[in-house]
Length: 88
Image (cartoon, rainbow, N blue to C red; front, side, top):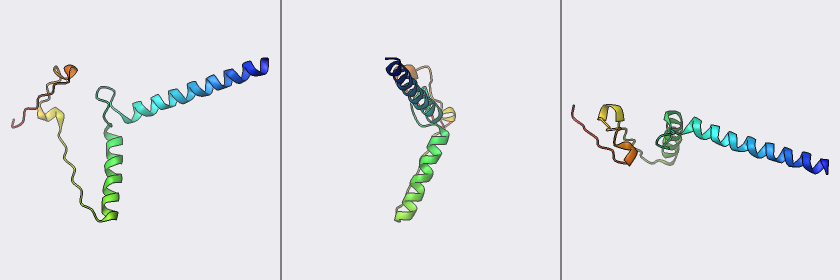
């Protein structure tokens, strides 16, 4: 019986370790507020897509919006409403 108890403890430890690692990976690659890829993750993906498009002879375009300069109303973000004000 002690062997089964030890085995159960080892399995529980391993599962806990995997869950924590997944959480750390998520925190390292995604914004906690929006769930979107963070800058590092985004740049890695864009680089992969650019290389893939170039290797396959395809064209690619990337459109970026600087939300801070675009005037995002963060007070409304909690309700899922975002208003952009351009031209300042």
